[in-house]
Image 1 (cartoon, rainbow over the protein chains, first blue to last red):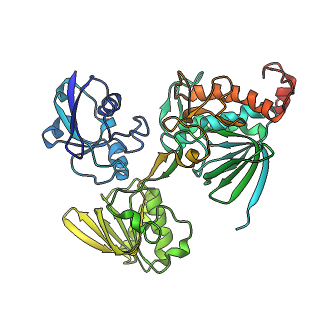
Image 2 (cartoon, rainbow over the protein chains, first blue to last red):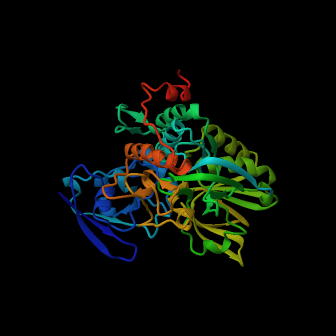
Image 3 (cartoon, each protein chain N blue to C red):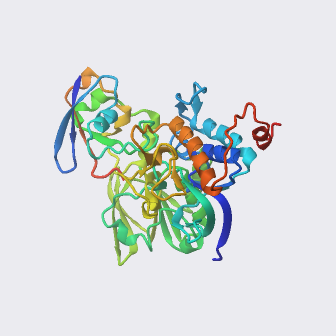
Length: 106
Length: 342
């Protein structure tokens, strides 16, 4: 189990339990976190699960993969800390992870 | 533009897997189909979202890609000679006094059909609109998400945003007729075909267009006429002079016009019964991801089942009072004849 906090654009925080092996996107959808649309259901094909990983966690969440980098072209306001949450796997090491949800996924 | 009226038995809205299999099931019952889709090719989400991704839960196909599944379904439907209309969004659907249905597309095609099958999945794929503050004000004159008439862009200062095939293709197509053209992308790598990227770089080298790295943050102009675009670059903010902007950020699914067809809706889904998969309007059916009923699973295989049962009721709607003999393709010579195998 890993606690994951989603921070909305307006500052509202929601902390939910993530299970190892699931993705951060699946964890958000399962807990009805607003702002994670995930149109494609996790196929890394739509860029509607874009999040900003809080700087402290960037090392633990790792690098973007090449497919994700391509797909981020379809996201808006991409920053250094941008990730697609369907490409971040939950693990015990990510207990306490904090990610920001963009104002809009498009 | 003159309107062409196509009279047919059935119009299927959506050429995804369920729409394509509906052609087959209706075809076995001698129901002739026209299929309309907003995309430029068949396959729906299988084509747009995951053409190369394997699907593992199609019965008897342990592994198949979205693209391969689409091709197999097209092959299976082929004996019934369906007619496909791509790049068309069905904008209007209404019941006529004689009980038939009229459908109109945004490309001015008009259908007159006995039954309608809504197999629209998650709705229609529409261009993503970047959430730039105030962008709506420019949408009719200066900001375009697709190009309908290239001439409208002749002699303008054009800014194209994106790094996919649409962005690069339109860069190459519009460069010759633009007063100036700038391509803006967030990085120096492109998803687009390498050949298009090469051609773009040659144009930049020849001084015929500009390529800039960055992301749009704001728009400046007056009463819908764009004057300049504010950009966040890697080395700080800058402005690009442009009176036309074309952002290409891919497609997203929106329910779209389905909501305006007078059908009962439940959270953007169309409720149907589980015997006939008919909507609140008799003669209009809904199958696949767009429908909802107790126990609904959004699986391609559920949509296939729904197509088969829907076809039976569509037959009765088209031929009231006529008996429908249930037959198997393995043993019925009449079905095999329709399939072109007997």
